[in-house]
Length: 425
Length: 122
Image (cartoon, rainbow over all chains, first blue to last red; front, side, top):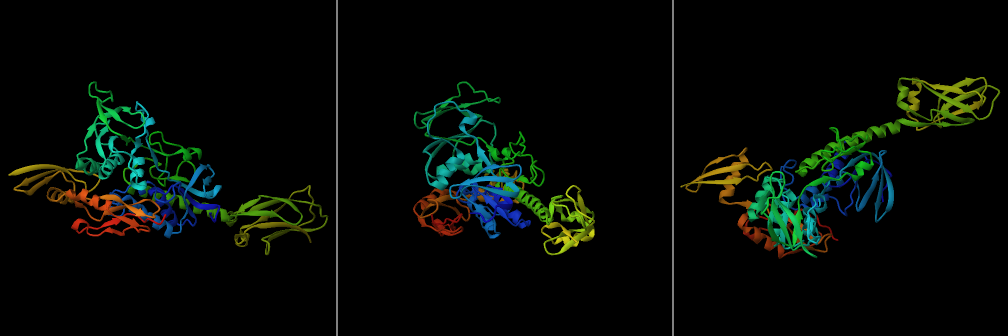
């Protein structure tokens, strides 16, 4: 369980954006940093991206996803970042309270001085692109298939058609080929590649996997399991070209048709979403419209390189640390003003110590019982007197005041609270 | 005899299209590259094409049933499937640490295959 109920920076998600934010927040001076991850280990989707191509920007090396993640996992833990695994954030409030739940600890709350949203993105599904046909098993998003093959050790099928030329789709074409499947073809509705050219070369071209531009899947066949798909050519307006249909026997259809920033939690927190990117509006420190809530990585807009997500995470982590530490300083600066002997109440109830540096603060109070002789109105910190004033009498019906002056600042600065007493002389 | 070959450089995400002119089996001109990496890539790709290979191997008593691995350096393209077959023949025992050598000098290429993450006991 957590040692604290309040953290300087809480990061939701431990992919490249979240881990970079954690590292940067620590380095920027945040003391208590927590990463919450819904999976059972840190690293996010990098862990299933076992192919090379990560780290060129940051490390000038060609690393696989898990190695890239491992560096940030190790660094976060060395810096003393706290982690909560297998834990889901149910809600984030605009006041930066998080409601979370885990199998191990049940339901609990965490307060954050700053939050970094790093939930990444989700894959577009069959339902979202509305492919007609029957509803057999064997239709997967490319990333789901990637998790099956690379982490769980299960093959999704043997004869595969891939819709969409996104990077994960092309990488899965090669990966499934490596594991003995036959990838019949990749169809792309656009007249150009939606992933990186180097992935076309080393994932499709190297293994003679046909890529058909301006082609899509028109129908899915199969009672229990996918048995075939009907592909069709489209024109520039995505109209089907009559007579171009082909039935491709297969047992699996993978979809690599786009990624969407994952912002359910952001919306609940009152974060405004840009309809163009699907992610929050952010400033240069990656702060959203809600003060103290930052966002970085694919949750903001979909990147094509993890290295750039890391760089965005650094900015958000730095911004969040700065915000949290300023807030923490203001919390230390603010102390309560307590009603002591024979005092019913004092207004203001709290003061910011630093305001006393250059202006007076008048404390207004009312006594509980009348004292018809001279009284001393005293302000102290529990041990030492800070200010006092003589009054001829004190009556509940007549408000009293005592003023703290800039010359009292040195004494007030040391106090964690101040108390006002009204004592007989 | 002069021969023209078109290849796509995969040294970085830009993916330049290179037009390579060969004369008597030697490269005499490379066009289309935007940096020096393209020249090296053309030389390599024409005479000894190589690729990084990443896959998984089985692991006993691990947190997951597989551990991801990769070749430290690119291996000759014609050997990719032989490398994968080698990986299918082995099984590791957890714990495995990142950069642990899984196969040394695979198929006498002088290249090691290493683990790409820690795999603690399950």
